[in-house]
Amino acid sequence: MTRLGVISDSHDRGYWLEKWLEYAKKQKYDAVFHLGDYDSDARWLKKRLDAPMFCVAGNCDMFSKLPRMARAAYGPHRLLAVHGHLQDVKYGYDKLCWYTEEQNATIALFGHTHVPYAGMEGGILLMNPGALMDGRYGELTLDGDRAVPRLETLRDE
Image (cartoon, rainbow, N blue to C red; front, side):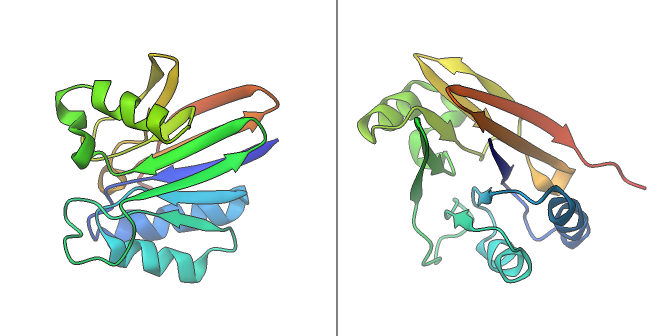
């Protein structure tokens, strides 16, 4: 079984970033995906997490040297990570699904809309954790042929 932490759109919100880091360390994720907006947050996390990190640049990362797309494979699961702005996800998921198929992936992780979403579209599992700046994050569990997304919210204590 593989457990992945998925975050996006942290937008330099130190409080939620630190709170999520504290949570992620307890979860001992096999890997973490930061789906863009702000690459400085992704770099900060990468220095503090023990898990491998996949980071992509978002629309607010115009001058970032991060890639615009990342791929990973876990058993039969082939993941594509993008921010989503280049796939126009605010206007629907068709373009993202086509791009995911072109990249030979079966799961697409994306952000940009700040709206949490997990569902099947055209045979592709789509997952948007929502915006970490609002305390939202996702977890993706891969177990054999199963992929189970969870959308969560950090609690403000």
